[in-house]
Image 1 (cartoon, rainbow over the protein chains, first blue to last red):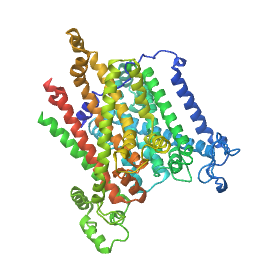
Image 2: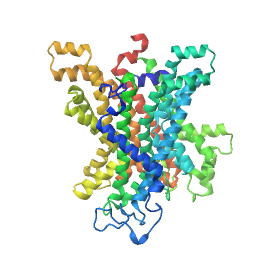
Image 3: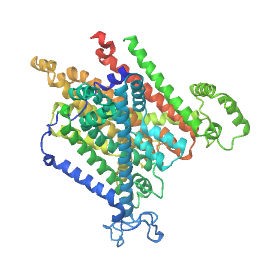
Image 4: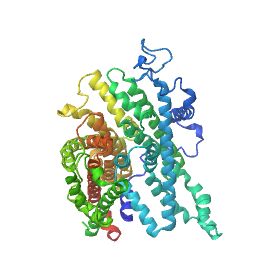
Length: 302
Length: 310
């Protein structure tokens, strides 16, 4: 099992950007213009996700059947107040977009964090105990890597029925195995370094050794992994919600808005395109920022 | 090929399958009476009793497990809610359509991704390199449901040159295949590029150059075969993502494949079909990984022969 895990991962080139000029050591503000744009957009999304309730001009779930499918501001038929128009039930699209962004970002963030904590903890356990614990953790890692997670998620939703907390748990389970594999490797090599040996020789308990000494030293690659995992989690959530199997009405998410909007492509294409564009630009910004962060933080990628 | 290598990989494949089937068994037993979960509401008590005996629900749990396993091996996953047909038959009808889509995607992605990656590596930092890398980032970040909808808007609704959805002619395949292939081709291009960059900097390539081998000869005869190993791996890795992507893409374009059957079955909680598809996907993944491992050993003698061979 172990051998196979290593032989299949070893020859894959770790980073296609390995040859990029190393920005490491350069000051933060010297990032390329594109990364600045990406970071700016992410800040905007973060602000929306935090203050969505304050920013919405209307309550996102308020329907008004008299004003259904009104077009956005650029059309002469648009309505005063409804900047992005209204959807099939006359709900204000801008308000829904803000709340949907909040829901999608919150889910992806929580999911990514759950996965990171779970994976990191399991990775440390595997590295610390070795032997059978290691075997089991790595077996689970291999197993999860072998099955497409979307299929697992769909099966779990079918078996247990949909509810919000189950859905959140699925988001958390989506990427844990990459953290586990990464942490295990990092901890195994960090443990042999001078500082870790010294701390152990001084009689520190394992808990203290890992949380106070090893983890702060290996946090860089883990944060990079976080930025790479985050867009994947957004895509998982939006895909499932798009299929109508994730976030359920009356709550909304970007994927769910897009799924509803695609029935009106012929008459009101913006209902699908606006939330879709928000998803795409968010994941794109996160990928660009994550790639930049990776080449900057990770000395082995130079 | 080293027998031990093959046997190790084969055992690992069987072990993964066993885990998947056991997982489905445990989840089904946790969530309630399997005859209620796996059979339609309107089947008679007779059918229900038949499956109760078949699955041995009156026996101890480990015997049930063996019986479930036996049924699964024989391809019996229960009966669909919708029309009381055996789940496997319903799934099987859809498989060719998904395979059609998958193979066309695979061919398109390879035909697009490998040359792009090779050219990007050979003319590094040129416009083609930048184009390839932008394409890879685009494919990675673009949700395929959104790409599909944009394509429908452009080609079916504005230009009216392609059918927006459905199955039948080659025109129906263009948009689903392009939607699915984009992310896949981007990943292949990215990894081909970095594998080629790695190989092109080696001494033997310089030697070949010094001996007067042409660029084409150096790239395709000397460098590419050595870069192929990581590329094969990434193809194996990407298959899972492609299966997930197919589920979404089939939905966007109303393609009557397994993916669409899966989503509608999940929505209806038609568990017999869902568990059948899960096992089928597991078999596909395990077989693919096994083949990748074999291809790998065949391409790279260092792996096939193990540490003693070196």
